[in-house]
Amino acid sequence: MIDQIQNAVGAIWDAFLALNADSKINVILVVITLIIAFANVRLVRNAQASHKRELRAYVNVIGGVVEVLPTSIPGTFQAQARIDLVNQGKTPAYKFRTFPAINCGPAESPLFNSNPPPPEDQNSSIIGGSADVSASMLSCELSATELQGLWSGETKIFLTLKTEYEDVFGKKRYFFARATNAVSPSQTYGSPVGTTVGPMSNSTWSITPHKLGYEAN
Image (tube, rainbow, N blue to C red; front, side, top):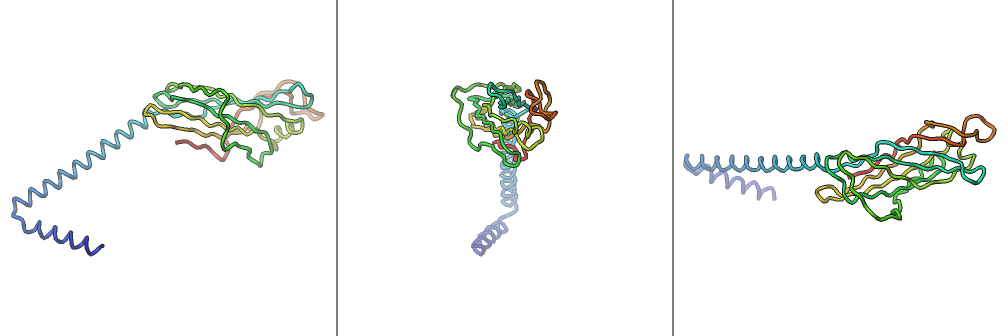
């Protein structure tokens, strides 16, 4: 294969050397024109790709909270969460849907849902450029012991949020976020839980990204 290529290149070079001076100049001009045309095509395609990247929708997480409240059953508590999103792009995110999931459990065992179930409400929405939206999570229950663990760091609230949408160019996009409650609550109120001083029956926690990170296209 290499020998064939070398022979073909040699034959082309010999044919070029056999041309008169005017013909050589014409061939050189044609080659230069082709190179310039190819470079221009690459520049146009790169500019178009850059233009699309600048215009398309980019949905991302900007914050959120976890709120822990007592339930009607003594000694049990309920963790509810909200994740705040923003479209950081210049154009709307069409057919926007969220798939949330929440789990409570030991901090060393990440209980993220790799495939959150679709919401009961199958309707989609449109998120304008630079607009924000909130996704409410389902709730999970905590015992008094688990609430103690939440304060000590032994228990975590694991939040999974998958979003699906289409950009202005019709391409399907997704964003898959993993987050947990922060190390310490941002607000506490209510009555102390158990005999130890510290954990309160009502508390609000900000959320923080998990080390597993996020996925997006």
